[in-house]
Length: 121
Figure (cartoon, helix red, strand yellow):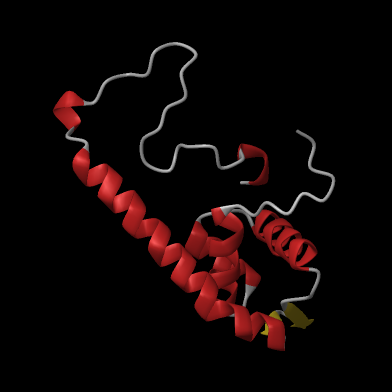
């Protein structure tokens, strides 16, 4: 199935947005996420493209959130918290001793390793 208007967003894009809101500096936000600053820029711009509105204005080295950026923060934080709860529940149910290796060709479905697109991470 083709997606002409690809509106998929990765969890890393959401985490990059939250880190940039917290630090207001791309280098420090990238360091907090342990990614390269260029990758952080990509994820912020991708998120803005999907939303169709800017989330930040750059003022020198500082990134100042727009009204859209401020409005979206509680919702994005809530989404990430829900995902972490889901992830914690899945990981807690799988004891390490009984974990099996996936069969060749099968999709590994433990932790965050389901179909979040690798190309956008």
